[in-house]
Amino acid sequence: MSKHLRGVKPAPAVDAEALTKAPPAPAYLSAQAKAEWKRVMPQLIARKTLVRADLAGVEAYASAVGICRQIEEQRAGGLIDKVMFGI
Image (cartoon, rainbow, N blue to C red; front, side, top):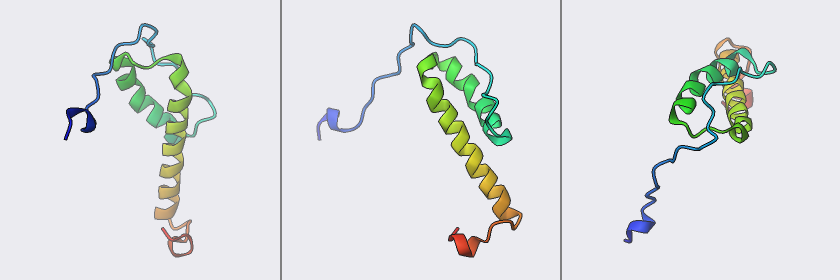
């Protein structure tokens, strides 16, 4: 098998326009989504690969995590019938 077919990726390069400070979490995010935003932003800023154009992707990721956590909390609290929803 060729070395090129093994999925070897180049090391991430530092972007010249990388953000140096984490922007605040968008106000419309849920509490769980804001917590995820605050958890991942320092790591992304430290890597110096996150640019302003990437923020929509981070927002979508944090929102999805927040929704999943909210569903899990409701399921654990008995608010969602796990048999009906096939969970």
